[in-house]
Image (cartoon, rainbow, N blue to C red):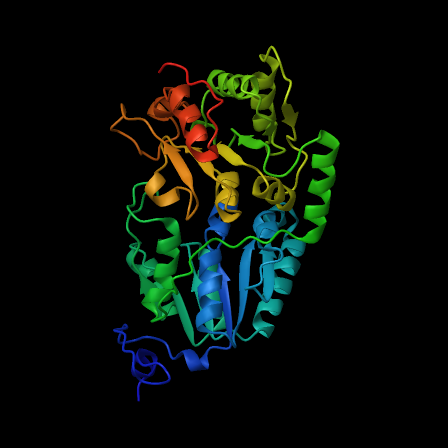
Length: 394
């Protein structure tokens, strides 16, 4: 009986599913490597793939290969056996040290004897690893590159799945579902549980408990505001963020401001906070938390307010009600996943989502800067059940 037919029937032969004719034989899969070499949010949106693999292949071990800077988001993940990392700083080393690091990683991966590689981007490193590690099965996105590159890609991966658009902001399905398409292509039907998975470690929980106690804050009684992003064209204006904080503070809210330890984000923080007349109730945790601690802090908040960024996805993973402001990026692909939320977008800019770095490439997105404060305040009211925030006129 073929592998596809074996996969089509469950153990009591009462359920039949239509699967690809070249579906993999899951009985052969004992170790899986999932490769996701992108940013923090991208890695977090991959966690439903790990969960699906573990549920469908309960006896298999699932490993991940990610960039080192994103690996803290996978620490403590119960669906992963091993997390391997690539340090972007390797490229700054001399050739001999680069080679040693790459060879050590390859030796570690080769020792795992993978039966299946799930490559979730078009990164060429995944191509070479799939070819060199030679698993029984390997799945990756379909690419439409030149003839030679396409041939090399096709002959490396046993299965390829189609993506919706070359511009990831313009797709009509969430990135989580697009990631799961890799499993659908090989005949693995994702279970209904497709939530993001993030389990902060005990050290992070302890550290945040201390920070909250020092600030006189209690779980569920504060709002986390994270206005920044590594791409500032995704951000609301300094003035509007300042007005938002002022309104929340006047309403008696406790606001915890967070930002990455990034020069531009901290400069934005300084500009916002400097103009506040009264900072009573504002707690500045900017640049002082690691990703695990940020997850704990957000997870205990009454509400999260931010833009299309990794902290917004962390809020979704921690099931914290989320107000998300979207401009040039698309909320259908990148919006808060499976969490109570309000997405704020412009009704006056039919050009969005454009995926551009600001209008005309000018780094300022008018579809964001023109968003009225009243809509954000109303969204906070709806999610928190608080009627204390006086709505300003739009």
